[in-house]
Structure formats: C-alpha cells, structure tokens
Image (cartoon, rainbow, N blue to C red; front, side, top):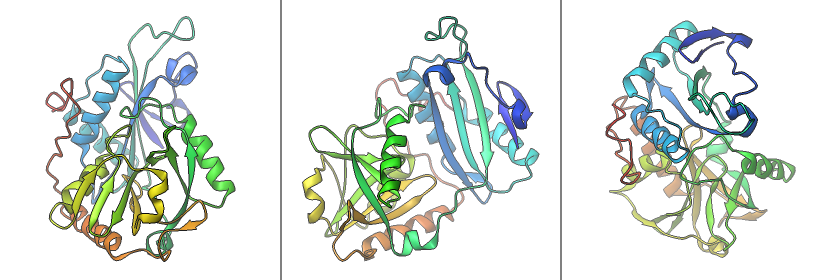
Length: 293
C-alpha cells in the first residue's frame, strides 16, 4: 500500500511517522475520514472544512486546501490501482523535544484503503448497541484521541453489540463512538444538538430528510429510549445504520422501521448523484469553510 506522508508517496513500512511525533506520543492531532463513490470523493470539501476547524481548535497552524488534497487522493488511487477507496487524512503536531510540546510545525499523512463493507443483515435487521458513560475530548473536534471509543467498543463487543452510545454525566445520549445518533418519534426526526461532532453524513441526513420529516435538534435523554419508534446511526463508512436493540432492550418491535428504510433509500439515491453541493456547515465565526477552496 502506498501512502502520502509529508509531501512524499511512500510504500509499506516506510510510510510512517517518527516516534518523537507528538501525535504518536500524546495523540495530539486531528483526522478526517471519508470515502469515494464511483471514484468521486464524497463531500471532500466539507470534510476538509471540518478538519481545518478541528486543527484550529487544537492550535495546529495548517490550512488544508481542497484542490491540493484532491490531487493527492487521485494520485494515491492511481498508485494503488483502486477505483473506490476509504480515505483517512491525519494531521499530527510533529516533532517534540520534551515529549509534550510540538516545536516544528506538523505532519500530514493521507492513506487510502478498500471501503468498509458491512453485512447486509446490519441494514435489513439492524444492529445491537450498548451505552457507555463518557464522551469524546472536545466533541466538535475530530481529534486523534479515541481512548473513550476504544473502551466503549471493547465493552460493547463483550456484550455482543456492534456499537456503543456515549452517555453524558447528566444522562444525555450524545453520539456513538464513530457515528451520530438519530431517533424517530412518529414522523419527527430527533438528534442531539450539542456536545457532538458535526458529522458530514449527519448534515446529509438533514438535507435529504428536510422535505419528508420534521427535524428536531435538542437534548436527548437516556430515559427517552422507550419512547422512540426507530433509531439509526450515521457516518461516512456506515452510512445509515439501523439500531434495533440497546442494552439488550428492543427498540419497539426490534425491526428496522419504515422511516429508517426510507432514509436508507434516500441516502442511496443521494450517493448516486456523483456531484454533491457543499453542505456549508456553520462551524462558527472562526470557520475555515471559506478558505479551504
């Protein structure tokens, strides 16, 4: 596998970072994860805007440009002879002298790999999830710190579940370890509105559902689970993923509901467009959305 590391295309084990990189030593850095459909990078500009926003929150002085990253991705697809790929963009803090503070800028790596493929049963019958008390560090930042996710998923696997939902100290449902959370109550589509990642697929859900369902962004509490008719998760690699059981308790009749099936269909149709307008996510006054062109 050939990867891009700090301006060079490197193969195999040579595609690596030094051990004194603060991203390796301390998990100081940010990432972006997306995939291609029919060779086209899905909402690349929006992913880069979010990555730039994450870097700003981490005070890493780098502004990534969409066209520059697109050239690198296309070259990686050519070098690896792959038509469709999953893509990871990794930016770390770079070299550190004292094992903590970075001293000379940053490191950037981009890798491509076969897109994730999940069993059809996941989408036809839904998956099981567990709950986990905790949340990600700097929730709006897609940082490299996934310690909470690893612990949550280990706990989920022990309980024969596929995903885990973060539960805050005040018992709010936040998000899953690598996905955003959605629930249907009748025709109302509900999602947490704070302390969560601004998911790109989450924003796509907003776009494709706006003329079909009423959207409500608000605090969602754990004790509401029994009130919901359907639940699904959204992410770049899992797309629209139904959840039919949480902590061994079924969601309604434990079947993938008609509204979730509708969302899966709408997402599939959206993907087939091949050309997607920018989502223009509002990251706040310091957003790089206008500079990452």
